[in-house]
Amino acid sequence: MAGLKMKITVPKVNLNWWESSKSELTKLVVDHNKESWGKQQDPVTMSPWAPRKAPTGSWPILRRTGQMQDTAKFRAVQTMVWSVRTTDYGPFHQYGTSKMARRRWLGIGGSLLNSMEKAIGKHIFKGKTVIRIP
Image (cartoon, rainbow, N blue to C red; front, side, top):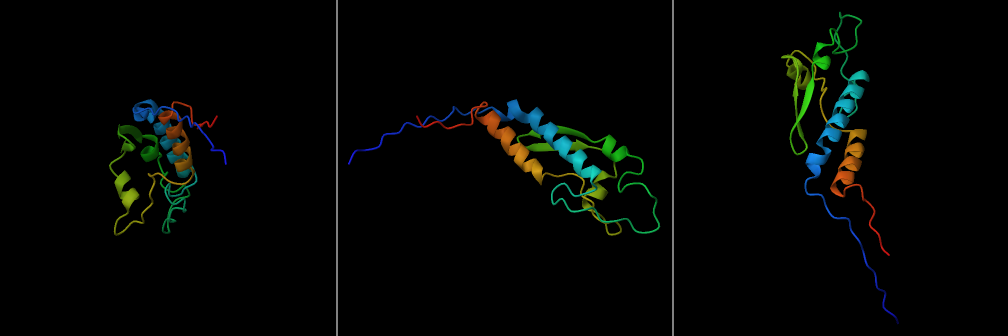
């Protein structure tokens, strides 16, 4: 019986993948945040935010003035970690209080994970994600 010979070519790994991908990943995080905000849903679980207690206004949840969302500034601070600057009351909505429901408006989940996986793979292998077997 004849032996089978194979040669597998694996693309060279880019050890600086974070530096080359952080602006693309940050944009994905920002876009995901805006999308989940527009849908009034938790960006991690994709569940709708808790409704407001009556009596309330007719504006969208967490959007009375728009200041919290509109002033949110995302910054990559280390590998796969972002900091967000926003209003002083942003954390109260993110985590909830004894008198206010939690309405998480920051986080990573849903389709964002797939988009991040593709972007990271592209940068780790410098766009060469195919393993060839000649």
